[in-house]
Length: 568
Image 1 (cartoon, rainbow, N blue to C red):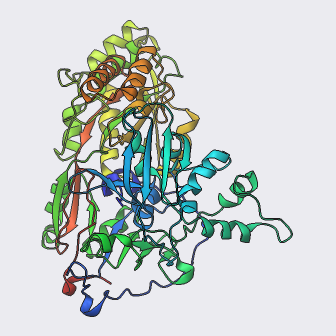
Image 2 (spheres, rainbow, N blue to C red):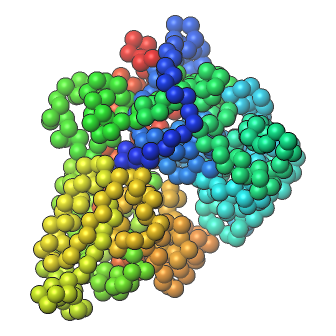
Image 3 (cartoon, rainbow, N blue to C red):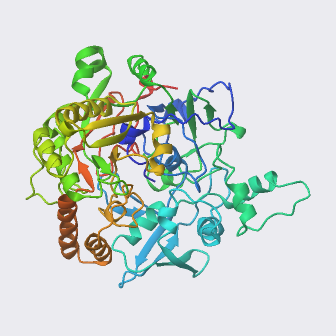
């Protein structure tokens, strides 16, 4: 099990969705005692206990089948549910999880998975093939709007059950990362728990709807404030006394004693609970100063530590990169002229002060050239970033018919999120550059909830965002016409051909050549102005031991806190 990196907090701290969920209201958070005699478990010989605490925005959905790529799917559900495969947080290697073994076919078109024996859900009931196939059956029916789990389901053509422990997954065509993409996104919830929720929600005289029916999907989709038991190291079942959710305050996951991982890997998942606090920026700072947090994300650590030197006694700074940490960018809306003209987009590329943006990140960033990791084989290192030159932008736009001196300035509506200092300063630099280029800038700054709601409508010319990357390096969803994250609707036949060919290329060297050509094309066409690749920059409780960043970020799989320093 791998919780996705905490440094998605660049965005998550800015989310304020105003949810109104059906949750436990006003409930007191029960104390969590140390686990085992004297707080030390026999397995691993490490102290058990401590509630690992961080900050996030309040999640809109805890249903593992429908939750999207937000707070829940990154910072909560991965602690509760397991996937077929995950990654070793220290080495980054793909490893078995609920699937004890996996055998990819030589032609890349399928993979056979064998389930781990003896796995139980948090409530003690055994994991079954019916539980594993539940998301796939819902995907086949096509009625339920699946969330992050659809990253797996959408890549599957069919599933063949071989016996009670094994099944073969047939992929939709050849894809170099199919095993990883499907294995790490296939979460397994407890089928009978969700069937019970649907049964409770249906009418008193209504027959139990079939799993593949639209009515079943309709009722299941209403389950958003609970998730049921999982097979992971923690559980969230507040109705049974495991965990709590205080609206606008915090959410607590309780330890699951039926976790198979602690048996297979002694010394893992030692914390007694996982807590997320929901705070505005001022409240987040107060929680940090009060010592209530174990990790705190801030790109400007130097400024923070200089202003609050006492923090150095309780926290240690960490700065690092990880596979999914992507790029700050401004996406241009190609469905709104004149931003469909590559000449206009190239002119606008001179508006971004990359040195200033690196400074905004406290020096923990580098100028970006591609939607890829700078150390990847496909990264176009030979390219040079566009020089910061608002005067050059003004000259180029004048040649294209946008002349403010004759009452024809370029009008640009920028949609930007609020909530973090880095976004605020980035917008300030851009506003100044637009003034110098005589661009008529209309700034639409929104809290992150409103930002997400307005994004799909496309009533913007530019979109400021922090874009994460696929951990396996595929930019298809960003640069292909049909890409899920192609928010600006860029469509280019050569880009589509390169992105499609790269997906089907199993030779890593040849694939890198195809992707490098794709990134070079995107750099010339500028569907998005790429700004900087940030580094993760956080403060970590100095009492936590065995906690270090790896290829997939900061994962507390083997972390622990000595008994005398534990928070309960």
